[in-house]
Image (tube, rainbow, N blue to C red; front, side):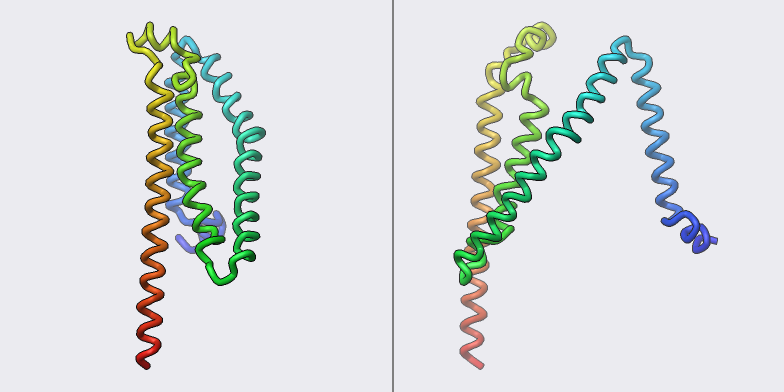
Length: 171
């Protein structure tokens, strides 16, 4: 029965159950949103987010990713004996903190740039002055941590290569 279902449906029964569960959760969320007086604002925001992501942000970060990979592959040809210098692994140690920093900026840009100063102060009683400095500190920690991790990985790789070279001489 399960084999026939999987052949007909194209996936396992668990896939169907999880798909239906996600539709149920989405339906519940829509029902909850429909009770809000600002439903139109939420729908405009969601539509704008889809348009902004699919037609603006996705091409930008996909292009940056492809360009970065092309540059790292090109730089690998400059240093053929040193794989670490031009590897995609190095590019990922730049890309990951940049992505996390970008997501944080996208989420908190009204607070980081002080655009929402008045409404934030009315709602919370706090100022947005600290957000830019804190975001910059988070970015610095992310890139420093990624650089430290890359350095540790390269040191360990060279050390392991040295051990392999020592054992190769013994044989």
